[in-house]
Image (cartoon, rainbow, N blue to C red; front, side, top):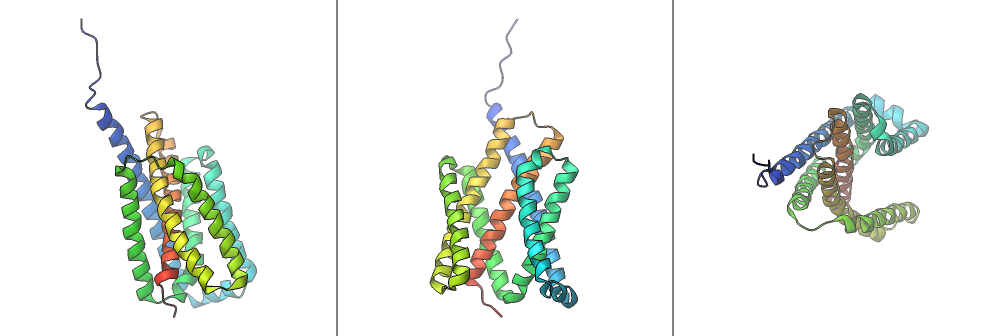
Length: 237
């Protein structure tokens, strides 16, 4: 009677397949969120009446921004306890709200600038995601420095809102690109780590929750990269 021994050659392959499956699902959710944001942004930007209603009510615009922030914090903190349907609705609502506020960005820049920034963002984002999946370097140690950099960007942006310094804006834009490129690679490895640690034990509901949370992380990285590249290469109307 022979003892059963797992095929060591197929075990790493099975793990890699699970990682690719979760990553693929994350990218699909992220792409869906970006498409929804783009559709809403274009719809709002092409509606003078809607734009006028938002602009004429500062309280409404601030409410949209607060709603975005509250949703992203809520989803990040509570998604593990949400049903798949609630998580999906929350992610879609955030993407739609973001589209409303980004409509004003579309109106501020030329079409060529928007296309250039989007092309550069897509290329660099894809490159950093690919790097994260093939490198043997563990980027976990870099994560804390990236968070510090993100807080630095936020503080500097708030200060420069009052200073109106072109030099500070230029520095913040380039630092922002560096930080979100790093976060793209870091978040990609985080998603890979989730898949490895969960193994094959993920239920269908948890698989959807992990996919949406991962998509939210990469969605934020992509959108912020786009905005910083737009500040660097964009030409205002």
